[in-house]
Image (cartoon, rainbow, N blue to C red; front, side, top):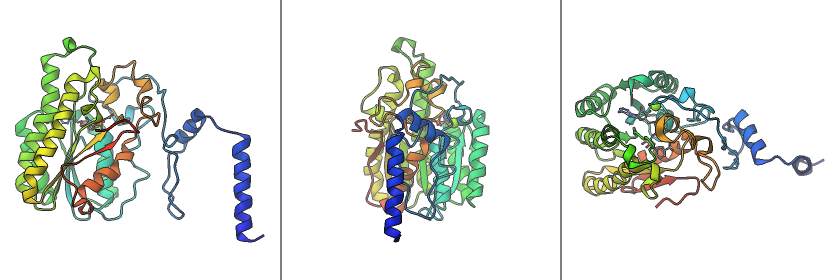
Length: 337
Ligand code: NAD
Ligand code: MG
């Protein structure tokens, strides 16, 4: 048999097997959960069906006290721990990522380190366990890591965080404003002044304080990346305060991009759809809604943090030198403008 004939025979066997035992989406999803996508190191890139690549709803009912831990989620989120491969796209850069312990921030931290950047992460003391895992992964990538726990709702801490990160990293080129507070409430009547204040302080004031403190360190070519959300465009009834902050983050991003273009600093935002992170079981969703989280997206499932890492890398890298004032989505097909 020639090589072509052998390949054809192989394809026919696979095809026949596929036709004889068709798998339901649920079965394929279960299989995907047992076999997380592995990077195909030698052959062509894996042609993964985005519907089956990761777990689909329904998810087990689960709740965690705020701020939640990735390690306690079922299924565990994929932050790219075993799959993200870098290619020196951020070699020598120094990045500060808030909320770098878990979820989208952790995925960005892993990817940045594997792309050659030194990384400082901020998180809350209650998240030390998640943060320790990120610290280990960044060290394993051969990069410097600075872990700085603390509460972003205080201006004094935000200033100190930036100064410490810049001092220990030897400068700062990338600021990722990613930490956030999200607490679902059915009615505005249930939102206390304390909750409203916490949401505003974490999502908006901290971004303002951190950006102000970082500016003196940022040279032309530096990048600021803010995490917004698709809820800025279509705010759910239950996320009155949170959605308001995400809309404001988009306006902040566009305004600042115009302002900082004169200094050669790019400012962009990422607007994710539903992503499987500790934000959701720790108050971000009503507990009854969590099992169906992501079902409404056309792809039928929530995104995993690893699926956003390339977006954060691109916006930070010099490859995106003409991209500023932009909002990049990853929504599983939901409208994102
Ligand atoms: P996450 O819980 O993993 O990350 C949020 C982080 O915010 C926490 O890890 C915590 O360290 C940090 N944080 C919260 N309050 C803080 C405070 N007072 N001081 C210091 N740090 C504090 O969840 P995630 O989903 O990865 O969230 C990251 C970003 O993504 C947030 O801006 C969130 O609004 C945004 N986002 C998430 C989704 C989603 O579905 N998960 C969708 C759209 C946007
Ligand atoms: Mg966390």
